[in-house]
Amino acid sequence: MTNDPFGFSTARKVAARLAEIRPEEAPRTDAPVAALDRAAATLGFLSREPAAENPAVPSPPAGPVAEAIVRRRREVGPGAQLNVKCPVPVYNRFVRFCDVERLTYWEGIARLLDLAGVDPQGVSAPGRDRARGTLPAP
Image (tube, rainbow, N blue to C red; front, side, top):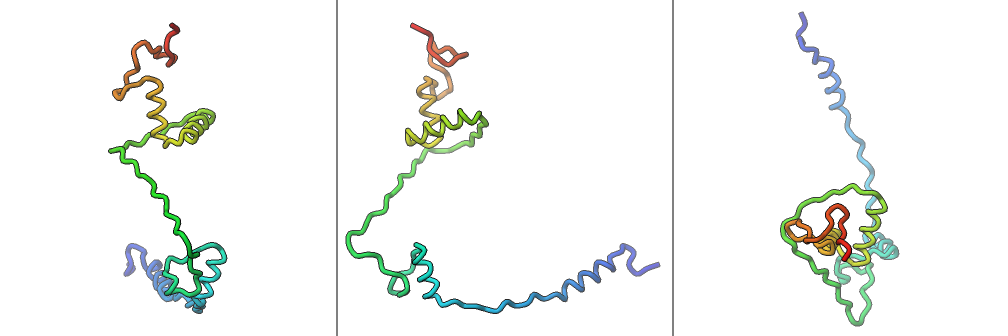
């Protein structure tokens, strides 16, 4: 009878050998911060540090300061996810419609529902042909 009835002795030996492995330390190559900042500035990256603290970063040009555009955040209340698989031409039409009208996708859907005469409860307007989605001829 063995001292290891479950056969873990081989696994313990392998674990012990793995524990002996130590990674080699990589040599440190500290690049000068000023050289890195100059290289970044030539590629168009600007430091967020004040220019007084970082002389390698060029100061912004003097003159009138351009104001940042503040994007308006639209609060619409609780949301729900809608995933739709549709033919590529229909998808392209919808995306193009939203781009031209400068609408988000949910606003585009709302606009199309309004144009179709569907009320907030999802009921079509009276007189609308439900099968074809068109109004009957006068």
